[in-house]
Length: 288
Image (cartoon, rainbow, N blue to C red; front, side, top):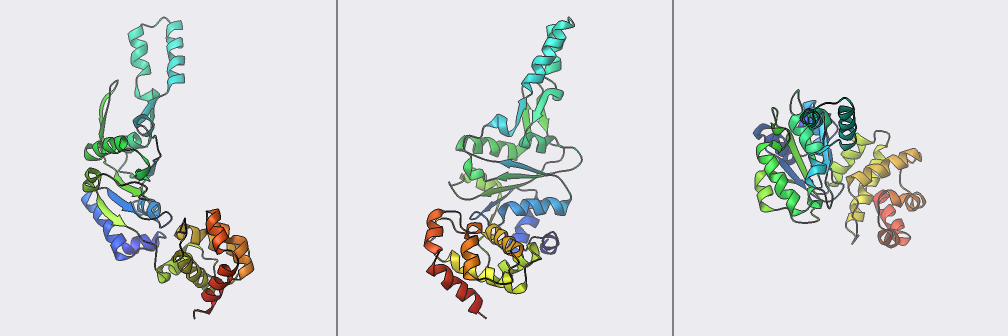
């Protein structure tokens, strides 16, 4: 699995590859926690590429309800069908049967993952910590049986249960019941060596020197008391920006102008700009 993930563009240490492999083999959901930008979501994307299947993503947020995640009826089309049926003189029972059929059902991510034909998809439930406890309880039920009952249609069961990846930024604690249902993986910020490998793989236009200096700079930056610590995603964005600016290495002026690729809080920008930037650049360039 480690080689397959790397061939798909994800630099994974054995612990990550093993967790993904076991999740697939045991058909158990994989709960991945870690800071923003460390590559949690990318695991699901890479898994879908490896398995050559569809990635279905449910983005969680505060206030997410069951209908939005599961299904809704296409109300405007239903009303149009009712009017047409009435104009045609069709019986009310026949009209009702027509409008509450699969043709008028809007499948949201969870239902689409259950009803998908042609093999199991990868279901990514992203930032599950943003949803509330009630939705988490509903989610636990779905993950246990991979079936859902729609009053007008009956119970729909998954012929091919999806491979499930859940991610959490730990903005709130996930309940014990959901944790027990899943395999668990924590992804930390990468080591310097791994981060440089990631940059070289994801930004092939970056020179070896530039990737190394970016890695050293970001590693040093993470040791500072920042409000929002930059993740690998920000390192990649910064490397791409510097390549677009035709830079082969770091210099203080360019770093000052592009810090917004790394730091996403004005207080962090204020703390790093100036003397701190020059010191960090000097260290990144001088360490070997």
